[in-house]
Length: 497
View 1 (cartoon, rainbow, N blue to C red):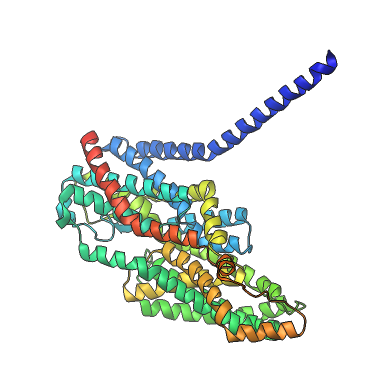
View 2: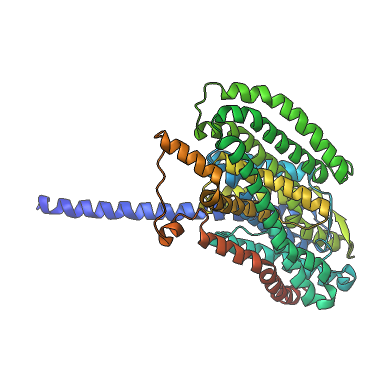
């Protein structure tokens, strides 16, 4: 009898073990949402404590919770563009990327975040059209909820979307519901719609140009190490100059006003100094390296990590307003009872945005980081470096031309640009063919020919399914957020007022 019972007992133990594993897996899946919920509650309680006795305190508490939810979603979706390429190229691990991005996002938001923002989000709606305080606060609440829900959905399906465009769509939809179509500045909306094309196109072209430069002047040279010693310091200097100009233009506005010519002068000076300083460093780092592409990746890894940190700082300084701008507008209106075109952002409101973005990144960011860094196209440190450099330069060019652009569209467009350029270069570059033929003749490499169209499709360097999904999400972001916001406006206005 004992021999018969043993297998049954073993089976029961296995079942219990499987149940424990399943329960553990489910509980692990609930940890991140649980922490996010705790953060939202803390923000609401802190808002209630800081605004105790203030008119409209209950509304401010609700808005703080919604603003925290919005910030969490920005961190989950938007920040992936800053560190995704570095992770995908294996220049740093996912954990390192999360820590660096969280620290620099928070620092950028708290140190260099703008203290004055347009409450109607970039002049989309005429404040006079929604001068009633109750109507205005309902519109801002609806815009926050709608944009946060849309970004949450986009993150769930794995599509990096523009949080700026989400809040723009939310404000537009709520504004139309509150005051009609005439309340919207359609000129402003037209320029924002144009940025759907301008942002990724500029980012892709600039990234492709830098990748072409690296291929021609470094990768396909007979002596790669000598070429790298000559040109890598130049590229690092360009990166340092671009980020210095970008941060001077966007990040120092709280301290002093810097125009475009002065920011370019600052960037040129910093770029020259960095180029001069890194030349001996690159020379020492390249000593003893083999004359192959793997060696080049080593030289680009540290600059790529630095660029990811700087992109995160710049993103925190500029995009935190997407989370806290409407919240600051609600706080101001609830306190004073009037609708202002611009308001100062209280420190606690900035903290909600800064820490919310960081928590969102840490809790939910890995999914989009892997999408941007690994699933669209294969990245190495050289290609990822081109993406980061393109992001900074594109924003500078767009700022000089007065064009509204999305950091998300620029970064993802740069990833697309790198991938599509590699496809074109692989098939059409005579320099690459000469290089491959030379290596084939020496017996160092073998090139497998493409036999038919089906095989060629399988060897596409950009995954078309991801490309179409992301483009579709970009196109419908503003209208989807607008429709959702308009519907929520009617619900919120009925519930609260």
